[in-house]
Image (cartoon, rainbow, N blue to C red; front, side, top):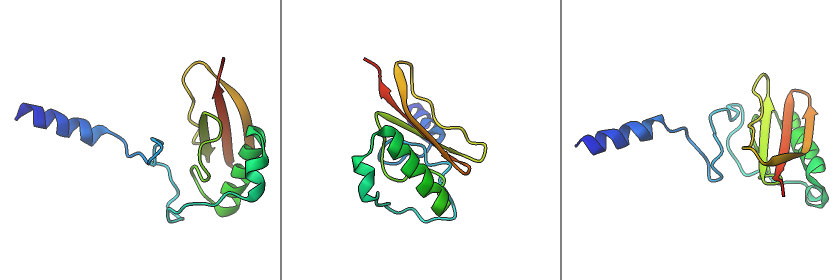
Length: 111
């Protein structure tokens, strides 16, 4: 019985996460959750270009959260006083873009 109580308490303290393990706590309440399609030029860009496209899309559609998938090995999105997530040690910044109040940063593992 004690084991079940401990498990229930642990599960109740966990944050909700989507399929990629990202926190969904700050997702926009003005948009329904859908799968966003990246524009064709998105896949031809480096990490900096992808950050710029994603930040512009977030700003144009008033989306607070990730839209196209992970850029690099780790991606952070921020807006209105919410800073981007930070990766653990050993990652280096490969792209950063700010459009309006939306910020997108990407990191890759250092070698």
